[in-house]
Image (cartoon, rainbow, N blue to C red; front, side, top):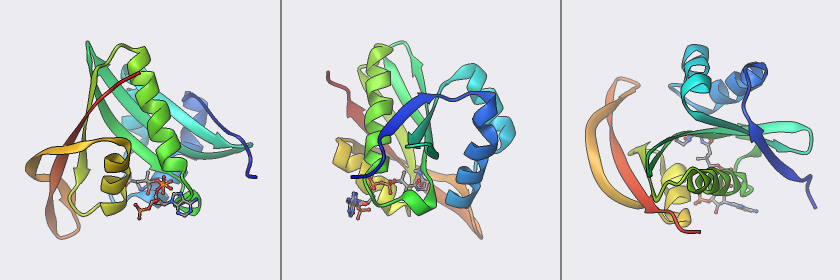
Length: 150
Ligand SMILES: CC(C)(COP(=O)(O)OP(=O)(O)OC[C@H]1O[C@@H](n2cnc3c(N)ncnc32)[C@H](O)[C@@H]1OP(=O)(O)O)[C@@H](O)C(=O)NCCC(=O)NCCS
């Protein structure tokens, strides 16, 4: 059996490790400034496996609507179910904050994230053309939504 997976609120002291995980996982990572602003404005979480920091996620809840803004699992720790655990924890948190629905955008090419969201219960509800910067141009975002239930 692996080490226990735990979650806690992100603090400024976590940012060095968060950025290491973020930069290794994304072609267009969030910067330190974006995370610093997020700490003041959004609900930011870090995930641990035993003592090791293995991921982070950010949600924003406005009245009864949640938005998933970031979900990242450390590259070396991907493909073992941690992404689903993190998503479940973030959606549980959105429910605690009284959200009834969650929306997210995902790059059209990001199949592993898309499948993760579908597995949790998200449905594709729209597309934003050329939403993301991409290597050599722009890329569409798929918009996904999920009703949150206790
Ligand atoms: C998207 C992301 C968060 C998923 O995290 P993850 O920890 O790999 O997610 P999971 O392990 O729950 O699922 C990933 C795959 O592993 C498989 N898996 C899960 N547990 C497994 C296990 N014990 N054994 C074998 N495979 C397993 C899942 O079925 C899934 O397969 P699929 O991609 O073919 O559908 C991660 O890939 C990531 O951080 N990507 C870069 C950042 C990113 O794109 N974030 C989303 C956009 S904001």
